[in-house]
Length: 401
Image (cartoon, rainbow, N blue to C red; front, top):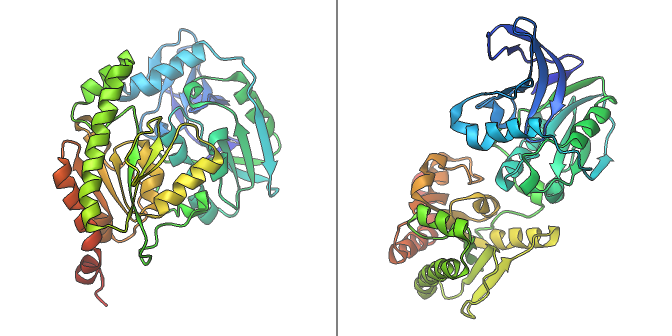
């Protein structure tokens, strides 16, 4: 964590002359938390990122005179340029704000979970458990978008809920900044969480209230995680073209193709596991499946639907689906996971899996990464052996007492 009040702990250098410069005040942009700094040598004022969230790895600076952007090119398109545009054209819309105080503290840590991607927001929130365990001397204040409010863990000092939709998550809302500046005046010492983009050592049950999979139960599901903007197909370029063109007939072809593959895998697994419940769950609008497949696809999310889906994931011995944020909660609750990796996503390996296993060898067994071009008649064998061979694997590799 980084102290930001009564003084700003992080040191800053001018992106032009590289001399150390003074940070004048905190700016809460949204995704970004930064400072307004002034270089007397260059006579320029800058916005500069605090090293929190993705700015730990890709910090940005913006010249507030001409809005020139400074930062790594690797994240410029999705991180740097949106920041630049938002500072140049701030949004003066009113943002609905709700605050609830559970415990009074004079010293606090602020965990900012605002983002434009669901997975990013969720992953930031999971940092809460580390602070609750390691920093009991400070109250934890969580800034959370309204859609994640239901996942706030017990033990936090305050929640600050902002109704910022994901599609507007990259904007700089003046009201957002003003509200937080006002709330900060209540405290004598303030730190901001580093909000690691891929935290570890947390128990998902503390956030969703849903228990993880129980391997002792004879009844279980095998669940495919459905999504309609990244289908189970070999060509990511074709998928992107279909999404951009938004032609219904092409989308239906891809969804039909995905459904055929899923049914083929399920049909083979059904022979070996006739008592299992075969389920398709996730987000979408597809409705036509064989009667023996339990369709749990939802089109609108709410607290009730989110909890119901997490319960379904918890009942699943195995979940399988295409790489993406759609795999976060399923992988955290299910017994085992098969992640279908598109060719262009291997650089994001393991970023959408919430590991709930401390033993390295057991973790490699429970969480599998498979190329997306894997044929259904091969994939069903992988899933079947994961279920059938688990006890033998534990006896052979884990139980050495």
